[in-house]
Image 1 (cartoon, one colour):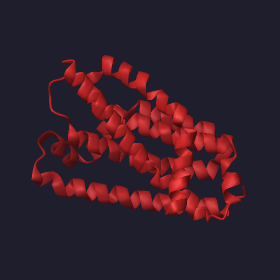
Image 2: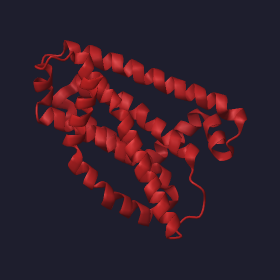
Image 3: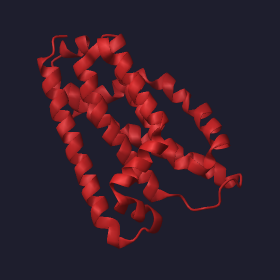
Length: 212
């Protein structure tokens, strides 16, 4: 577990400049489309993941890491564990944005906790699709994969609405918070966890066999 901590720390060192972009990003978004502030939860977390993976490829960090006394599964596992601090950071930034908008009188409704939670879930789903492609295509396909996923997260409102079409109980739960719709949401979360684990197994298998 200590190796995972240092590997995650390495990722945050790589993306520290990207973190500075969060300030103007949230200021601009807060000024323009504050009524959809929950959608901002997805973009920063996904952008951090994409940026960290891209820098790994560009700086040949994977070649260095496999030369260390680490198993390749440990390297992949750390990348998946990093999803949770990414999500937490994005969540905290969204709350700060909400607090600032509330203080300025731009919004007067309570925080949409359930919608924010589902946006974080959508981030984990997209990350589970992105990471196997990242390990499979490597440096040759990084730009293409990044372009596709950046377009997806730029269209996150449509993606979120599509998710609600597939799982209408989730939409009812967001709107009402009714306990009658809790079970489908729990099943949705379990499905997401299974997807993450399956994605991790695929990424590990690809990375173990990959010639770096």
